Image (cartoon, rainbow, N blue to C red; front, side, top):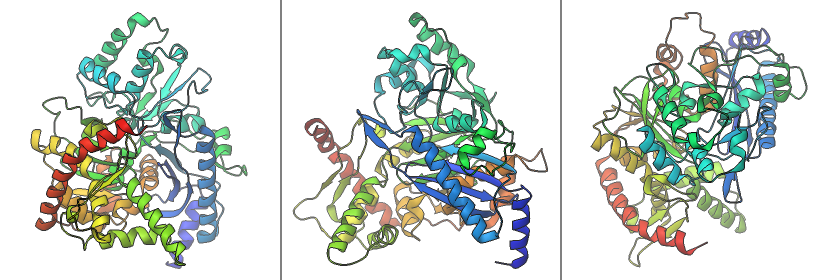
Length: 535
């Protein structure tokens, strides 16, 4: 690193001109510090996992706070070691997390029921009823589907709800005292009107009429958070919030905090895919493609979310709950076998080598088929999952084909959603920009994604920084000197030419994936029988 850059970076950190971004992902909480120009200056992380408790996927809220503190502590240490300065002041901050889910609190902010994450597929009847009532696609993951499910089940806590929010919204409240959400995260709770940038008025009226006979003291508008567009502050870090981040008590309060966003929104930011006809795909524990639309779709499709970019453009979102979780589980088993034989195999190295090896497999994975449904998959109509691996006696059962089958499987549910957007609606996208763990291995992730989507795939050099970096950019956006500058133009100046040339689909890979996808679809009744028979 250039010594002058080091000195300048140390000065801007000490002067409180750097921006902090934190993202609570499904397996990791990460904190990233950036300069006013978006350059990463340091990072820290904390690993965690969801839990299945009483049939509900959840995270305990004390783990949320523990993870935030631990990731910030690791960031502070990184900054001290790299720049020789203690991180005590921030220019701005922002917090993001997994979208959707259900956090309902009373007037004091106390949870009325444990946090229900996006991964729960228990709201099928509620989601279908709301889709019809609101004339808007309401997936099972959405907060409003969880609320209406609780109402239909006559859950006792519903009448006591004072605030309904997402995980990012709850964290924002803990750190600022404000119940607010960014447009993108809000649009995964309840329909947001792109014309007004806030909750859709007609949808609010229809929902209130739907539940009027229940006699609740609240209307939906009463309990939903305030919606705030990108570029504006949605509160400031309080003294109590600063202590939650920094147990040592040296972090100063007062920094402006930008609107909290969901991981879909930060994914659009890190790939600079916020303009119409751009698109990105995030692939890791779950996988979702976001295509920024030029106009609203011609019909309501239950497979497709209609959400918004952080600056308010309508997006068609194809989201699948399951991506690499089953592949990761098999990789862990292979690592255990290697250790039994005296070999060392760390997760990251093994993951990369298996992905690279998969490129050498048969185009269609040799007749093998995997259904990696660790949890339910709404895209194909499953409320629960039972991971399966199947083969015929004459299938080519090699390690390369085994890895390829699991990586293809990770993209099959996504393909079902994209078929709706591209084939039925004629949505056009010139390339997809990929980010997430699926793309960490050079070439492999791009090739498999290009084969599954039939679209060129590029990977921004900085996408590996992840959603925390995207959130830090949104925080830095609130500090821009030119207040008339839009988000897309700001991202052009920050990300610029860092996006690689797109990798076009290989015809052999496309044909192989299509053959695999046909086999995968044919095997779904086997998965359904497994769900029914294996309690």
